[in-house]
Image 1 (tube, helix red, strand yellow):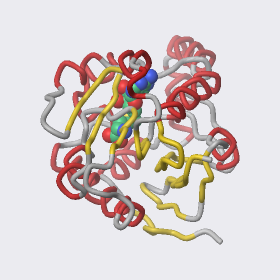
Image 2 (cartoon, helix red, strand yellow):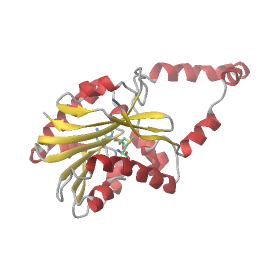
Image 3 (tube, helix red, strand yellow):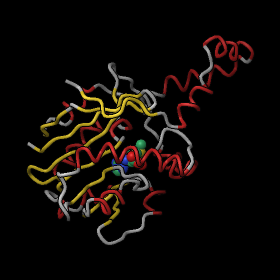
Image 4 (cartoon, protein in one colour):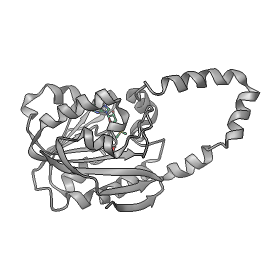
Length: 248
Ligand SMILES: C[S@@+](CC[C@H](N)C(=O)[O-])C[C@H]1O[C@@H](n2cnc3c(N)ncnc32)[C@H](O)[C@@H]1O
């Protein structure tokens, strides 16, 4: 039986989307008025299934806001992060010890790093492969940021982490890459280590620059973890599934 953690919360993106949602006839009119505009659109439609998001380009343009769905203010980013942290606490309160080793894969600008360090006193490692974020990271005690290359190569980090945390990262990978990455991440988690992964899902797969995949796809991807899919929350009407479990 599924349990909802938050009925729906609207970020400023909801308002933005409503503003941008042109009715169908307006979209068609645009091409009738200016037929040449249809060619780049057709190219985009062809390419969109094979393309992955270009994170460096996106972050150069949008800065920290690039980890969210659209350009939003710093205060909106904080508001959303606070709501996310409240949701995550449900799984982490009573399950993390002081000094627990956390791997935050695809940590972006590290918006959850203070949460893990200050609230739970964890030993936090954020991992990124985007130069923009890597350049801006500041390592502090109990708070490390490393590149994806280092995570891959450093065998001292094998069987090292107590918890793998991933928030909205797998949706950005094509299937083969998602599989390669989870296989690598599995190696980094201690036996009986835990995962807490949040991904937006849908009933039918939508392959795009950002893909919405089914719950079944993800439970299969995380098959070496005993995951529960009991909890989810709605954000801007999007279904965010929480995958929580232990390495088998
Ligand atoms: C939607 S953002 C989410 C960021 C963060 N988890 C958050 O919730 O703020 C996805 C992030 O995954 C990062 N990413 C993509 N491929 C990666 C890889 N191979 N290794 C590490 N990070 C990666 C991107 O650079 C981007 O910052």
